[in-house]
Amino acid sequence: MATAGISAGVQANDWYLGAGAGYAHYEDIDRLAPNADEDAEAVAMFGGYNFNQYFGTELGFNYFGGDADTRALNLSAIGRLPLSQNVSVFGELGALGWDTSAGAGDEGVSPLAGLGLGYRVSDLVDVQARYRRIEDMGDNVNNGFETDVNNVMLELVLHPNRGTPAPAPVAPVAPQPQPEVTYETRTVTADGSIYFAFDKSDLSAESRATLDEVASFAQQNPDYQIELAGYADRLGSAEYNRRLSERRAMAAKDYLVQRGVAAQNIQTAWYGSELAEGVTEAERQRDRRVDAKAQATIQVEIIE
Image 1 (cartoon, rainbow, N blue to C red):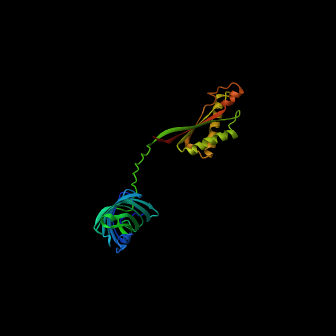
Image 2 (image 1 turned 135 degrees about the horizontal axis):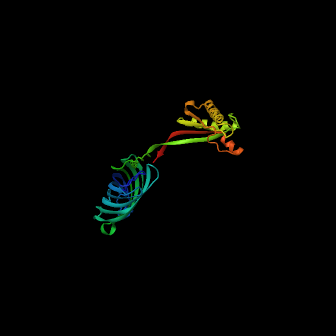
Image 3 (image 1 turned 120 degrees about the vertical axis):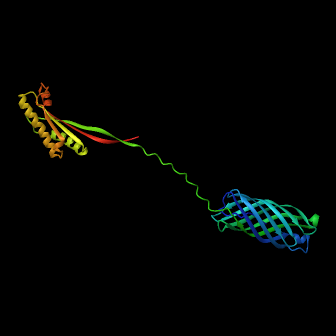
């Protein structure tokens, strides 16, 4: 008997060749032929094709010796079940076309069924053991010979094109275009005003807090320039008010220099009461001031 040897690692589109040897037991042959031997040698050669890891087909040549003296061809459908990486069980259903020399000689077709166990030794080689049952081989009416055959075989199976499946090729990943980065020069500013009491150039706590913000801007933007402009209200002479607004502007500059601002980056100007507009006391308070304007240029990334 010849049945496909299937290892647990069988792959689709796998063809194979095999050969084996064993023995055949002829049931009831001694009842029809009293001197016939019930046991005899058996050999097989076969080839098959696996459509996938569960199903295949096989064509084989078989010889059953002894008193049966039968040559046969089988065509079978193979079903299999992997149990582990290297071990599987398989089954067979098919037909056996036989030609026997027993008695007067005869030929015919009989159904067959089989079970087996396969072991994958390597990518090339499987070994397997199996049992097959053949019904009604021979015809008692024609030649006085008829039997059911129990066939046990040990076989070697070669899989020339079987191997460890290559990993699926990984599609190359197209490099993603890098975003284009350009730079744009922008101007940033920080403005503030500080206020003084009547006829005073002393800095109040609130004025220092405002100048601290200007100094912080300078530290964060190295490319900076600061402009300080001093003013006075209308009360007093124009010359006195001009000197008073100068003292106010210089008081703001000196404080910024103490806070680490470079003196060469500070421009001062004073206008006295030239631009004063206040009439009421509240309006004159707004005229007693120094306007501080800080400006810097920065490079900004523009991603397109």
